[in-house]
Image (tube, rainbow, N blue to C red; front, side, top):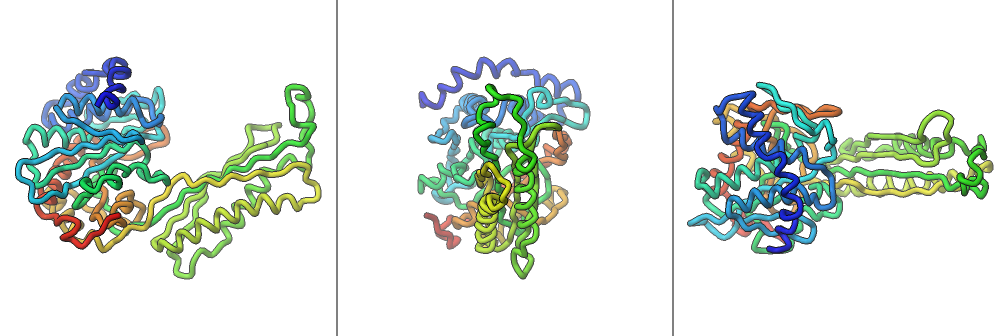
Length: 428
């Protein structure tokens, strides 16, 4: 436990500067018609202002650990920085728990844009949608410890330090390492969008191809010879190779059934006019409902990118080589659809009772990582809003509906869900 709270002693004094400001701001712009939702949003505002991504999200983890300590909850923290909480109930139906999970990080944090702005209807801030899930988990932990929320089984709450789609798979390390934590079912909590549920999961790979030109001997030391120009025949070598690679990949027919799709999300090289680009980036996204086909497409992308650089050496005018680095930045597998029919039936019924419009979608869902391990799982959003280029916009009133949805799902699923062995699931 000393390791867990080392973060608190070091970081919390800085975070406490924000303490109370979010709640006071909420009091100014709206009444106390939904104090529980206000508290959830206040936690999200404080978390959103903490820098991210960082190594294991130490500062955000310290805030969460302090909140849990105030609730008299003793969490576990693993070597990857994940925080796991098990909240016991008095008379569980069996030993398997219900898992709720979200991740602490954001790729949209900004030192100014993440300072949230509020009015009577909306909350706005960079990365705010990313952290609403963790704030909701804190709200659930508080409701369970205060007996405002009744569960028929223990509840596991996971705050993942890394992204849920991290190819290394460390986000669910606490669940996979300890058989006693293997849950009967799992619910992923995200910020947006309330009512949207992925019922047909797609697998995705996100791949970054980085190409760099190795300078010749005359270009090796720019400090000694800064005025030596790049030869015209090699000036666009990186750009040409990037474009050639993108064209080759775009021209591939990935499968005859049309289940696999290829997207170029970013292509960039150079630093401005008058400067020959030495490095370039090509970011690619693959999506498929066929797992083996997705793996084949990923391997094809890697081989094509690596061979494109080699083929560029066939240019008789080249004086330098193109080095290529291919990295998988994100992976979500195709989920096991057969694990979830009863869950979707439960979701539909609860959303209907709460007058939440259900939108069934096709897409990638991190819960597929768990469904492939035999754990019935899905993800839900808790608020209406949208993500902008520089800022997220959250409809404040919708947060209360999202909070009610999570609590209703916990109450229903904790009594209805069978244990993994009863439902026929297996785990490694």
